Image: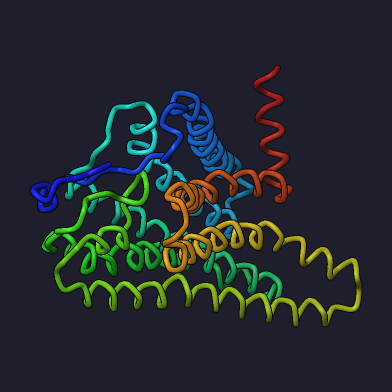
Length: 313
């Protein structure tokens, strides 16, 4: 696809669908629509179960509700452009819409990372200091943690996102994905982007990387406590309460690492690889988290089974 130099400074950007698969878009709509439906249905089901089941009104499940709400918003932030491309409704996006979508995608990623860190803290207290669990993680503390997560995710990003509005985009306006990312926009800018690069790197280090390190430290301490338990049965019982969270952490961080590696070292790779990695980063965690917690968390699994049995009756 070619773009004339006269269009380089326009305020519209071309979204990249699935290069080489354009003729199959009507068929690709089916799996992508199914994935978005699973994201919506799965996370709404988790929220409904936690809301209606009084014995799930506990810190662990409050954090799970935050995770489900974050995943739901992540799905909604990309569905207009991804399905819009596949259905042939849109091919371009305005700069303002692109900046707004970028803000929500990156903000929700930081929010998910923060929630996973809070869940790791919950597991650490539950296993390493069980007698003080209810006194440490009170409803008031959980509310403060939730507010802190929201502020951390939403208030640190605007400086780097707002500056995108004032950059001069003189390179071809072709995005690498079917949605907007900060690193994609600055790649097309001819202005001084040192602030965006430095501040963006600082955000990643102080949010995603720091959270990953703290989660790892929490599990080292959990493992140290569990190994001190004499009974193998009690050890397994303690570790089983962490399986769902460990899976959620892996489901979140592995696609991020993969997408980062592709952006950094995969410039020679076909555009389709970039698009697939981008969609995996956006859609895989919101789709998998409800499945993981429905299978691995006994209380959620029982309530979901009861919910479906009532519908069949």
